[in-house]
Image (tube, rainbow, N blue to C red):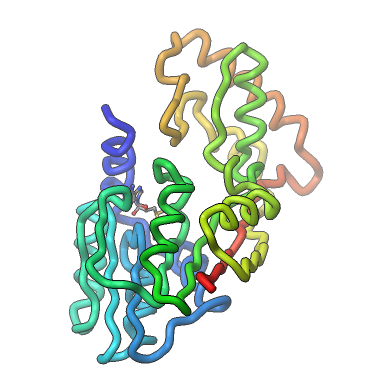
Amino acid sequence: MSYKQQITDFYNARTNYDNDVTRNRAIALFDYASPQIGQSVLDVATGTGNIAIGAAKRVGANGSVIGIDIATELLKIARQKAQNLSNVQWIEVAVEEYQPSIQFDAIYCSFAIVLFSNIPAILSNWCRSLNPSGFIAFTCSSEDSYFALSIVEACAKHGVILPNLHELLGTPERIQQVLTQANFTQIEIYPRQLGTYMTLEKAQSRWNGRFWLHQENPLLELEPEKIQQIKASYDAAIAQLESDRGVWHEELIYYVVARKI
Ligand SMILES: C[S@@+](CC[C@H](N)C(=O)[O-])C[C@H]1O[C@@H](n2cnc3c(N)ncnc32)[C@H](O)[C@@H]1O
């Protein structure tokens, strides 16, 4: 199955995606960059449309918003939620294939950019698709969020090299570098810690030894015995992290705004 199909299936199955956490962490992007009345906005990987709907209300009747995504089921929810809004349009298309016919004042992408193929090329495209005074606003996660480094290390212990989805945009320095290369300026990075302590059992259950969203997932090729060994190493590493408050589950989100000029 292609990577894109895996992602589509994964999100199509998440019709319970919306809750206070997913909604609030997305619309927090407006705290750092908000579109103005009459502007045109693109929301990439809109999902259930939280950013697109928030933007449609902000730009008003003379503004316009396009929300794009590959997950049909999430777009259905977005459409339903936006029934009373006439200035938002939904398009089922992958970001890699989308060819906009207009320039945007703002391009948003909340909790999705790491899933895209060829992120540097997409960022360059976004820069070209912006009006001169336009901005992009997106989120990405630190490279150690979601126990990613513990998972990568557990695999390495057994000779399996697991690419980390969050590596490219996983530190402020790398975000700066990647955006500069894509011709962006005035790069602002606002870290927000959304992490929590969890019980050891919950922390260990966060990873089943196989699941990994990345274009190359070498775990899919492994025998069940090998997976069990890796999972045991992961469980042991997580147990080492336990304190009297539980296990710290890092979720350090970078809210990023960058401008064309
Ligand atoms: C974690 S959800 C975020 C949804 C929404 N932006 C939010 O914050 O509420 C990730 C979304 O990215 C979409 N997605 C992943 N890869 C994509 C691609 N290549 N093109 C368009 N959408 C994609 C998924 O279908 C899913 O809706």
